[in-house]
Image 1 (tube, rainbow, N blue to C red):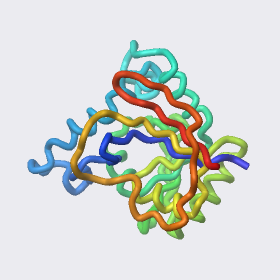
Image 2 (cartoon, rainbow, N blue to C red):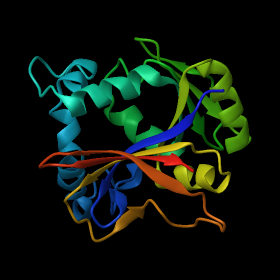
Image 3 (cartoon, helix red, strand yellow):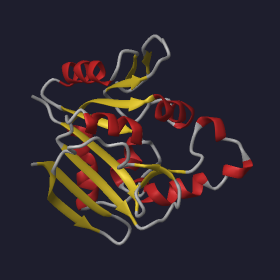
Image 4 (tube, one colour):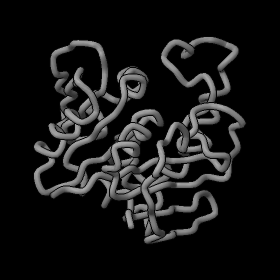
Length: 212
């Protein structure tokens, strides 16, 4: 059976996204700093050659172990699951060729026909809960893996279902002081993980945990 994994960036104080990073606050001046905070969190990824190729940002970029990890993450992923908030922000900011190149299942109450994008990405809108979304994602993924892309509340739902096999976290030395925490709202007993790999760089520590 395919594995279910999380692959995210995380601030040093445990936030996946800064305060105010929602579609409703996109243009509000009181939240204008969230873009800089998000850039500080994910700058390591945007400097990788693989990401630059995938997002069509132009030539160049860093190679090496972290770049190889990013490529492996995308190549192993046969389907993705995300929440409506993440989709709304991405619909506004992703390029026309969305950077997933695989089916994406969006947890939402909104009823909407599948949204087909160039490059192999199709967004499916799932109205009947995380278990159903995972069942569909596993079927689409085949012998490849399912990535729970975010946001924090969606990851928490799958943590509480005890279906996540691996956590891949890029821990970045920035402090948000507020926003959306990753490890909240978890039910006991929480799943147990062990450290599988650590790749240390000046801009992020890449941690991989696997289920015990």
